[in-house]
Image (tube, rainbow, N blue to C red):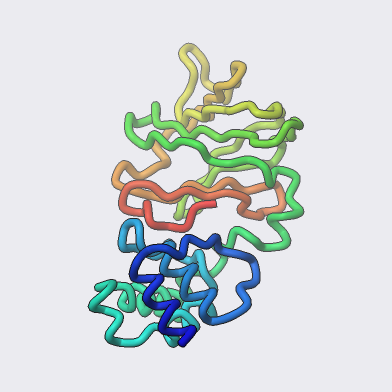
Length: 218
């Protein structure tokens, strides 16, 4: 009876529960996955563990497709993503990330077009300043943009241009703007993934755009 009530509520869109770190039952998993899928018909890639997705699929009967067409297919695709290694290394909750000195930095904006005028903006969401020594921005291919050895103040943003500042031939920072002074474009106009990596090589934030927009963002 509980299972039937849960499925009816899912179909009605009334179960708007948040995703917790440790979902207690298969019913909880099913509700959380459904709530993520419902707004746009897509399950956020790598947001749930494989076990959560399997629990959600197992508790959702085949005839549920008449209420939510495509929901089961999406769960199967996400499970297949795990099985193929597609979620390896992209979890936003790894212990290394939580311990990182720059864990409060986020990628707030990506402007990939414009050649060497392309830019990425990062923001410090904490109230305290953080050192950018050894910190880099990277694309999917591993190309790096160094952020220098300065600091980013609390609640402040830094816009990083790939090219040089006018009249300069080396990396240069002026207030909230950094010119990396590279000779080639880094970010693919059609789509890529921007990663913010600390000095130890830990990815603390990432954001996909364009054709890679569906990549899990944290």
